[in-house]
Amino acid sequence: GDSVTQMEGPVTLSEEAFLTINCTYTATGYPSLFWYVQYPGEGLQLLLKATKADDKGSNKGFEATYRKETTSFHLEKGSVQVSDSAVYFCALSGSNFGNEKLTFGTGTRLTIIP
Amino acid sequence: SQTIHQWPATLVQPVGSPLSLECTVEGTSNPNLYWYRQAAGRGLQLLFYSVGIGQISSEVPQNLSASRPQDRQFILSSKKLLLSDSGFYLCAWSRGQGVSGNTIYFGEGSWLTVV
Image (cartoon, rainbow over the protein chains, first blue to last red):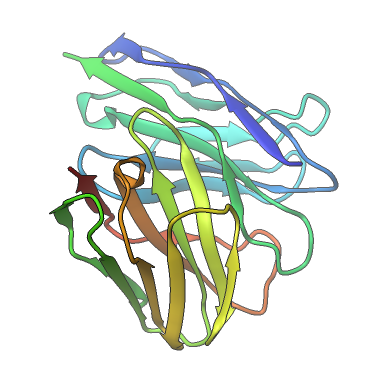
């Protein structure tokens, strides 16, 4: 079945540092890939997504590129801020028509210190 | 615009008591609806999803059930809670008539502690 493996945390960085959170997946066909973010005490919000190979999703300075050859969707940001502290989830949805059920990674907790 | 609400936000229930979490979506029709659970220190697990009124699919066997009495209402229930039911429950929706890659939107979540 489908699965997502993401970098285990917690990750602690200083403000303005470069961020990479690794995510790899296993799926049949051509899944869509997502990054969701969960701020403390809140539900999940979509951060960015990519629906086909070589697509780059971007939002709020975060980027991730759909790499089919390496089955990866790594999240990056050039300069993190304290407000980026949150839990980040990588996820995929199956490629079957009508199948929008998300398979999530276990999440990576990111803490940014001033 | 579309919005999703779920309640209650927080509840503490004794073992063996019943549970009812409710979720409603506004601003769209015939959505796909989902219940996820996030256990402490773990990822998100899909519990139930629904593509229409009265149509419920269960992803994992468990002590919980779901119902969809109206197009935009999704209810998570239990007759007798277990300690292992504690967690963060998230309702979510996506546009129906499934198109691969549709975004799933989440509610604010409900914290359940079974004591």
